[in-house]
Length: 67
Image (cartoon, rainbow, N blue to C red):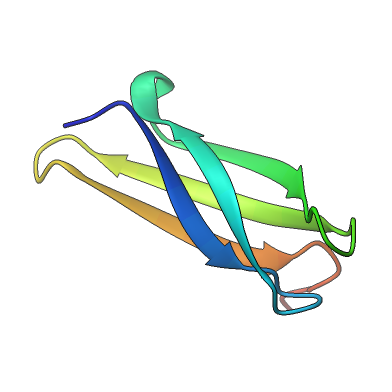
């Protein structure tokens, strides 16, 4: 599995497609990146599955809340 890649995601705030660099060398991670268009923070959760050699990326707005 490649440890470094780029993924195109849709900003949950403005809808523009932006490129997010991913580094799977440290395993599963949770991090924030700012949209290059509207500058709002984007919450990203990356789950690395070494067994199936896949990366799952979950994208949501920083202001979303789960009750």
